[in-house]
Length: 237
Image 1 (cartoon, rainbow, N blue to C red):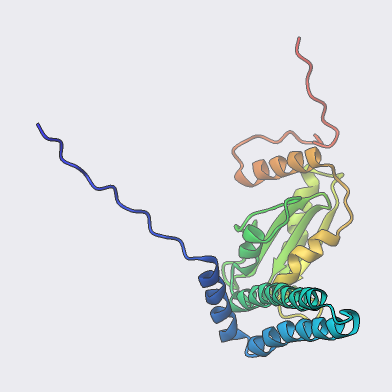
Image 2: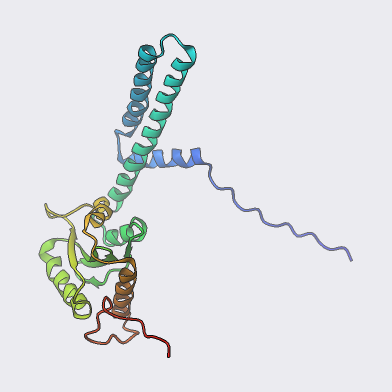
């Protein structure tokens, strides 16, 4: 019998790098009207500097002049890409600024490897949609309030008491994202976390994260008075 040939469905082609960059630029331009001028200047300025250096230092050598010009063009392209990335990130944060769950989106996608966070809040006010999120890293435990401080301060204090009840030796830091003058913006959350002085080692961060996960889920019993930073592995008999 002749075997029927089945056509294997082709995988959809991924967009090329240039197309992706164009899409990022288009998205950014909708929220940042100055991005086109900024990118043009970021390319022209290094190219102009390269031309000036070529004329001053090239000493009539065609190869040297060409290399200075090429260096200026490459520097301009690199600078433009860096600026586009930062402006695109700011535009993306601007789209979700002020929306419930915005802090969770940042914790899910923008944290550095030394920090652990969840997009799900640890406390929510059902009426106002204010929330408290938690991140764990070498700086300890950070509680992030989403909403006005007048409403989230008490929620943050309640969560700190819960953390200190099972982790009395771990530092707890507050951050606030909201309309208050001294609140931080979404895009500054990773930067603020990175500036917190390290207090824990990597194994301690994992132990603290696991303990808090158990506390949140309620599936595992948490012995009172046990500090994971002082715990010692049991030796096999």
